[in-house]
Length: 409
Image 1 (cartoon, helix red, strand yellow):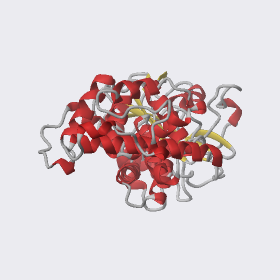
Image 2: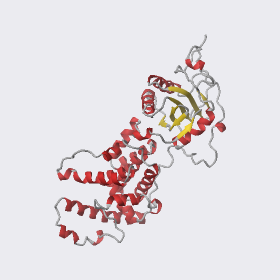
Image 3: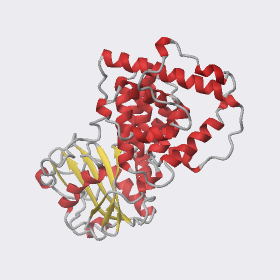
Image 4: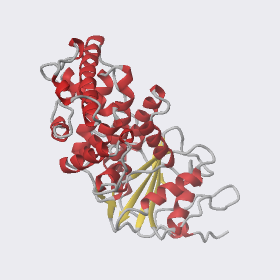
């Protein structure tokens, strides 16, 4: 029987046949296929920031330029349609993208001598969705335990052709780097004491703002066990934005207990946390605007919420692409706080780490941090939101703005 499927006409992509002589992958034509597929696959870890495992990677292409990459976990049985819709829905948001390339990483699978290739049904659905959205397809590849190749190839090629050069720094998979090692007891006690001092100072500030404390009485000394230490950080509205920007230059690995206690307060207090995360994803002026708005409409004040300032929407992933270095430094601080803070403040730090990871486009780490936060506080609002976003495969809008690119000729 003559095969008339589009893949049969694609150079270098011979369709695979089942035992009835029919192709098992009936996808749109692969036009202008990538000439050096091995070089392209060597570039994928640079695009994703890791070497993917058990992953579907969709690479949006603008002409011959790869505009980043979208990585999703391989779906459970029955979820192929949902994952395909999510992947192409995100690819369609990439400015200038007119085609895609698809790579499946399944290290648990082997290249079969005949019959359909692993995850062929998933790839078929992804390519069908791409065609429906007007996106061309320039390649569909598979990496298994015993090699790599294009969907339709009769046998795999050796892994050595697509392996990264030693020392490339991307040999970790998407799961590595999310563990948080708890600090020793002495450090945790020191940070807990500083957190109590910061909490006392912040409580006094809120009382004064609400008119529930005599301003003159605010100069009275705090209890000895909560008196500000010599390095206690101010938590007032005027000082906080500058301090939050300064914090991005602190050494996360050698964080002073007073600084760790201050950040533990910030990241476990939604009013302060949202301002901090917004500022770290933008700039000090945006942080100052959002913090003022947060103070103005706190539910306990009874004030009207008023019009949302633009900066608030950054928490939803809207707006200009953040400086990734600011996000990475904020993430390092959140991880350091999660390691050293007392249990009651850890969920806030972990949820903050989840949001910062999500903002960087790392949904796997975001989900890991958020799951830990929810394990400590099942009703933690930010953790639940991040987990829902990860479940839906949603990334911030700025993830689709030009960033990591690679040639895909």
